[in-house]
Image 1 (cartoon, rainbow, N blue to C red):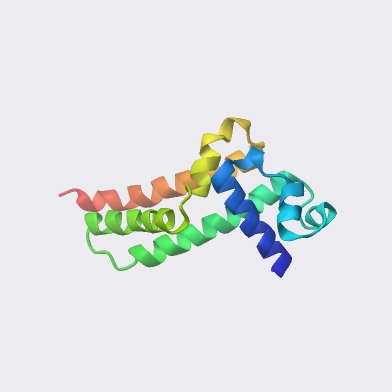
Image 2 (cartoon, one colour; image 1 turned 30 degrees about the vertical axis):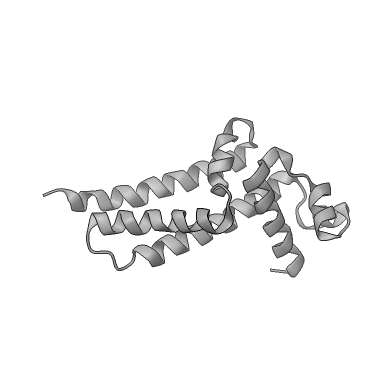
Length: 138
């Protein structure tokens, strides 16, 4: 991944987490990075493409962290404690809301593919927790 793409994704993620999807524009991102707006369009044809790339990268990072953090848990309570710690650490470290939490609040107004990616993020969280709940049953 090129440095410009990484910087665009970083800036877009920060903007979405702080202000929401609709408040982030290609022009604002270009100004922030000191590039032309057409350069943003070179990498991401539409805003939805950028949003999907941001959500995909975020999802990969979160689930990699969740997998690593919960890998050696032995009890359901250990699993849930480790699971929550990933989100707690992220919130404390960035002073902003979970990316998909922000997008979930805006889901009714998001492009269809982006809303589906956000819904898939939440469903994966539910599935991971549900897979560990049976361990609590006697």
